[in-house]
Length: 384
Image (cartoon, rainbow, N blue to C red; front, side, top):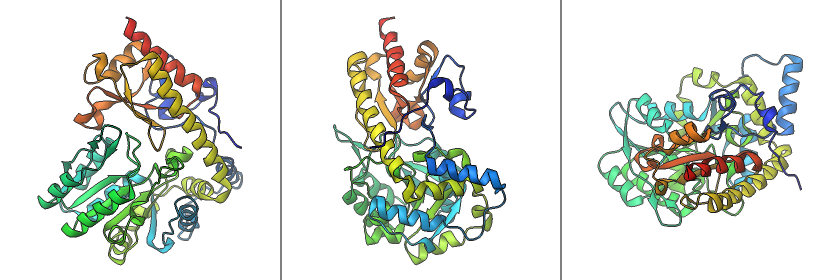
């Protein structure tokens, strides 16, 4: 059974991406959503072939990308989206904002569900709309969509919603029933739901991940999904995402986007995504999920042993941990002190919304050794 192991720290520091260049070499970087694993073999082979033959030109007008994703979705989620209802673009954020520009008018309000991926706030502003905050409900054992609060926002005139499915930073896999209820509300009030599903391939087995467009007939009518291989396969720098629809009206919106939106797809990103979505990469992805499962449990054990004041719920998807450090008395943004005094870089909690006060987001897509050292460094601050 394949197990995907993180690369050694010395080798990782040879990388020139944001994770390894933002901070000095004495800092352990667990902030941005890049992982420390080698590329999936099929992805590496596809990129090496492209370099060998100089396949570095423009993205073709006809590619196997949409068919590759449709087959991946059928195998992994039991969902069969129509390749004819997809268009590619550079990344998920671009897909979200371009759809938002078509389904909202300047000054209209878009629902977001904090704590949520910080660029959501900027993407709404970039589209010309305004943010309507409806925080997730803390159930005491997890988080869920506040359907009553969302109904209130729709009744008050919000015209679109950015859904994070699975949710970043909490790692929540929204229940099918919740997504279907959201779709019913959206259809009742004429609201477009745009679902960021970049973390979907990283939903752990048994968590019941449901693509929004597969949740119900209403979801297919009101919804858009934007997907990518970039988070699971660590391909963010290669620039490729897919905008997916399931209804004539929503498909017409995406088909009506300027051709330049599609031309921004990266050639290497497309080649890598096709390889990532291929059946050849399934074993690697399964091995990655096993490693992340071990790491998310290891983090729980480390925090219980070294930082018992921390509150952490094991995420159902992804490699991002949402940790409440309020009890330690390190202020609204504890990541600042942790960076300064422990030399561990975490994502600032308040960036995700006011609900992030006292919180940090930690990337556990790394080795057990780095994860352990990071928690031990942070714990040492308690004794100072």
